Amino acid sequence: QVRLVESGGDSAQAGGSLTLSCSTAGYTHTFNTVAWFRQAPGKGREGVAAIYLGYRTTHYADSVKDRFFISQDAAKDLVILQMNGLSPDDTAMYYCAADSAIATTWQRAEEYRHWGQGTQVTVSS
Image (cartoon, rainbow, N blue to C red; front, side, top):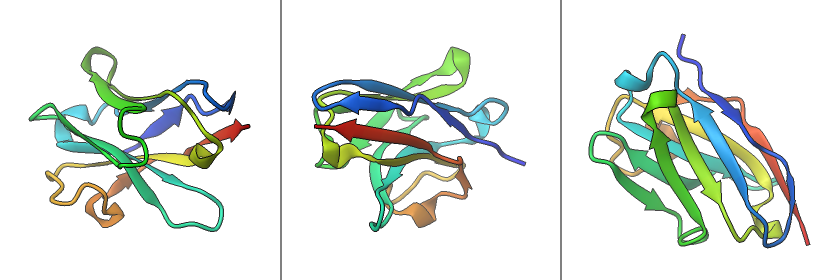
């Protein structure tokens, strides 16, 4: 069974940085799209960023553009989300999602069949 494991969630002060990692070990070669989503209490799941591994292209939600950066460390089977300039609005559970298909609409959660359990990010002002 495909298993994605997130790590790096923590508490941070506004303006700070955190780095989230998603391990795709054992299945990296099967994925074409890997994305990070987040869900704050009482809100729906929001696509944050995605990387198309074959094309090496990245996409971002407007709310995180120029603050968050998604990348792949292929040697370590990791997809990394570097988060800078954090604000309390970034507080959420962050999930890694992946699929063998090339997502047509990367922000749609329905495009991804494989999900991690999530890692909590809490930003205080």
